[in-house]
Image 1 (cartoon, rainbow, N blue to C red):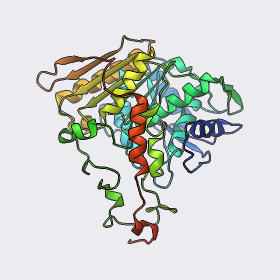
Image 2 (cartoon, rainbow, N blue to C red):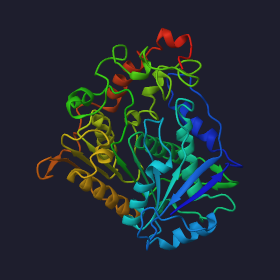
Image 3 (cartoon, rainbow, N blue to C red):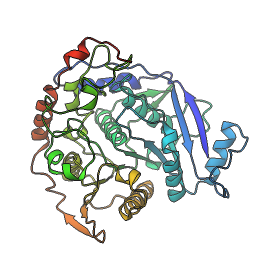
Length: 407
């Protein structure tokens, strides 16, 4: 069952606070778009028991009645904020309704998804502002909302791919605001910037420069279509002369990346592995294949663990990015999705397990322990320098500077 809500944030300083965090971490003063707050469109998803037909119609109920029924079906106070992937440019909650329903059935909780603004029309930090305000809506709902205020201790943030990147950005914003005791005003009420009960992520993207060593080391087992190289030689499809242009791409002014300015790719809220401080974070769970982007999540896990954060990391041998959406019948998919749901459920119950990192072998799905204190041989500062060098080399092609549509 799904319930739709639309709210415009009012009596609100969340936008200014988020942009303030973006500015304070923008140490090279790169220009970026400063989005406005827009009406938030939500979908609540829950498990509907007693329905034998997969295509059974929704009951003829009002949205408030639907939510009441949905809430009655839950077995737990858990609320999952699901932040979906799509390279920051694709998808709506409808694409993830089946996943959300499965999570609801497995955990006994309910799932909220927000229609995050998409690039290239809405570059960074538009989507991050949307998910930040979605989180605030859970803990400080507007008048007339069908759901009551949900404490952060009952919220788990889940996501995949670029949605995982937004999840980590959200967590970093909350941590930074919390350290300076910021007061968030949302729908006329003051909200403390408290972290959720946990964050559980599939194929997390934590480096959007694609510059760390695993990008080349794991190229044979991943799916990214363009070859490894520097920012000048790398064949990004939408920067090729043969790629169709239209009213929305290239942007005006033209950018070298679909999500943000090229140099902004190294910003800590665009590439969260560049964040040096995760102290005070809730427990983290990362599950991925043997992907080109794993060094970033390894670095983040290593950093957070050394700062006292509970971190679980799993890597599945020879499996590509978001393999669980493609190889739906693979035993690796069954295992990782079950482990993900179990982590979400346990976080909602207050669990903070000891840190653990494992490499899951393809044969027999056996676990090889990894040293979670030495997952990568470089520091955050060294990684940031690698990212900055790569990001600073991105250039807008001359044929995009002319801004002429081919469609």
